[in-house]
Image (spheres, rainbow, N blue to C red):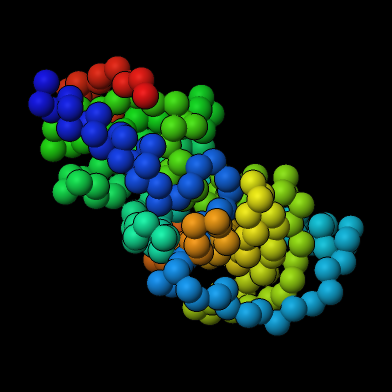
Length: 232
């Protein structure tokens, strides 16, 4: 029972309130820089309508050429800092982070919209609906690129981050304004800043590697005990 109580507590922290990444929105992550900083200024250009949409859609489509990749995400939020490692292959994602002093692994399959929260130290996993795993949805760069056009984004400028030429876009979702930097070469969102009613949230992807990833990285070990998803 003690072990199951631990995993239930972690689910509450990570899924319900740990709230580093604020629900299923393809980019509402922005950093608070002590809660008072303003988003960095970008050289602005006049948004153009159809031509701009076509350019952005073409850049975002490049993400489909990526088979698999590994990267790190670091976020600053009004509630604190969050960091995690991600692996993505096709429509599968693995996230590793630490919560409540425990290693936490989330495995997600976007085809069947399911995810597992796995505690290797406890040898226990809980199957959860993908909608209950906002951290992994927000951190899945390929999925963010796929969702983006549904928010009517506009290009407001260009900027180079760590040698990567980026389109800078703005859009609004759920009443929150977001600025996002999209790596033009690969169509990946590598930085996001969102203004929320609680403060700024900033998320940055780093150490991006394009490499072959073994299928078993997205699978639970055979001997893991799977427990029922607790109801909240």
